[in-house]
Length: 314
Image 1 (cartoon, rainbow, N blue to C red):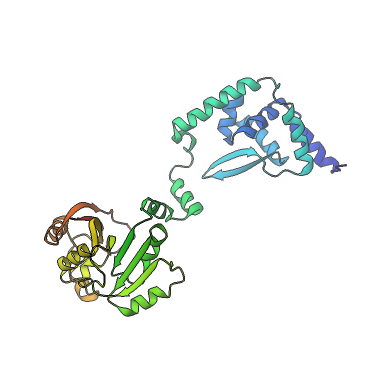
Image 2: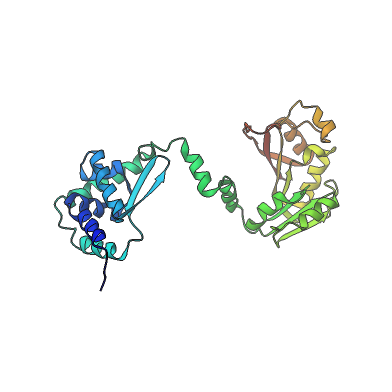
């Protein structure tokens, strides 16, 4: 036998002792709704709907979560035993409530409007949505998720891998990654990473003399490396040698800029590359420029804007 405090029982019974509140519980059992949507379904002023929801929330029949400034209500996932028992009785007898059929019809319309014009539903979220999404899922999930588009049978070559950032990011989505850098200290650090994948092989070697046989990889990657290489054309030609015919070379680097101090402070050989530069380098190396994308500058980044270029190996 279930026993509860008299005050709690009276509160629960009081919350259910109203036809409108029973109708509200019935629609919230079907869908999570905002206050305005509840008001539209049961045809009440929003302030009145809000008062009913407050009573149901206090009685623990419903729960509330907030997105931005919008409160969303639904039947509580966890109710006290006595509240759950009372809700079971109420829900079993809610289909014959006056107005229930019309509520169902209006609920369909409200949900259709929500999907037809998402701005209506998210009008109170607006500029907060990106912040909220980052809080929930982090700031990098989109780019990481898009890596799933890669063919899992690919072998990727990371030229000038450094400490393995790109290699580690790509490895879970492809068959194999070969990561090469001319600095043995970099390779040593890369091998010591705690997030290293078992399908990554690290090698020491020069971009102009890769320790690989012809036609052995599907994609070669130069990530912020090409501006350090004096004979960039030879490096691209060497990459095209080891990439299978029809494969791709991906270049991520700086757009052409005039920051001459980079040559002295960071050892840059080239002050970025224009699209015309990359097209000419590709042609001389026996490749063709398939795509060149200028990446938008970041307001909090101090360096030149970047680009991505995709070369097709002929």
